[in-house]
Image 1 (tube, rainbow, N blue to C red):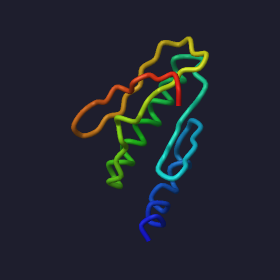
Image 2 (cartoon, rainbow, N blue to C red):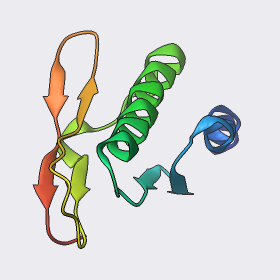
Image 3 (cartoon, rainbow, N blue to C red):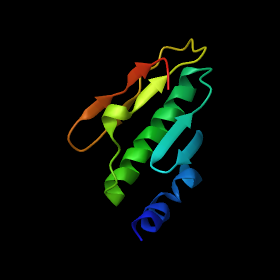
Length: 96
């Protein structure tokens, strides 16, 4: 029953995410092309919305595993995930 309940909780996430999203089991990936600074704001908004969803449903993300990866990226950006306790700046990675 627990896996079904998990699927019921996460089923609505793709409906309100503006960027591209892939979900598999308990793994969620967001991505988008960043051509201008405004594009990075959309991605940050999606991250903020995910954290609000996480707080609402008490299904936390493992922030130590949350990373950003840049591929052919020339716009200087930083992303964060904010919990009630702290702001977590996402580390950059070159491999997944």
